[in-house]
Image (cartoon, rainbow, N blue to C red):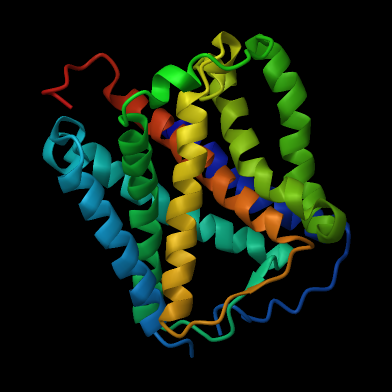
Length: 277
C-alpha cells in the first residue's frame, strides 16, 4: 500500500514539473489563489463539510460508522485526503483551472489542510449512505456491462494517458488541462492493476455501476457544498475552464479518486475481522 501511495504522490510531483521544464514554459508562480486570504471562507467550507460528515456518521447506519468501528481507517483516509488536496493544488499551479485571490498564512494553511483531510472520508461516508438507500444498488446493478479488460491491457491503455496528462498537461495546459485532472485517478488505477489488485471499475464488467455512480454523485454533492459554503463565507473562487460542465466533471472524478484511494488504504486491513479493523 505505502509503495503505491508513495509512487502516486512522487509521480504527481515530478512529472508535471518535468513537462513544464521540457516545454520551457514561463510561469511566474504567483500565488494568486494562495496570496492575505481571510480565514472565514475556508472555515465556512470546513464547517459545512464537518456538519455533513457528522450527519452521515450519526444519521446513517451506525454499523458502517468510521468513527465508531474504523477509527484507524478514518485517520488513514484523513491523512491521504490532506495530501491529495495539496497535490491537487500543486497541479493547479500548472493549469490554473481556478483562482482564489488572497494569500494563506500558517493558520490558513492549517485550516485548508483540515478541510482536505475531511473531504475524503465525507465523500466515502456519503457514498455509503447513498448506496444504502432502498433499491439503489439493485437498480444500478442491472445496467449495461462494459467489456472486461485484463490487467495488462488496462495498464497498457491507461498508463500512456496518465503520463500524457501529467506531463502534457503541464506543457500545454490549454488543450490538455482536462486530461491532467483525470490523470491522478488513471494513475492510481494503473498502480492497482500493476499490483494485481482490483480497481473500482472492475464490477462494470458485470453491469454493476453502484459503487462508481454513488461515488461520483457523492463527490459532486460534497464538492459543491464546500464551494458554496466558501463563497457564502465571503470567498472568491474564479473558475477558468471553457465550460461549467468541466467543473462538475472534476467533482465527480474527485469522488471516484476518493473511492479508489479508500480501496488502496483498506488493503492494509485486508484479511482482518471487522472487530480487528
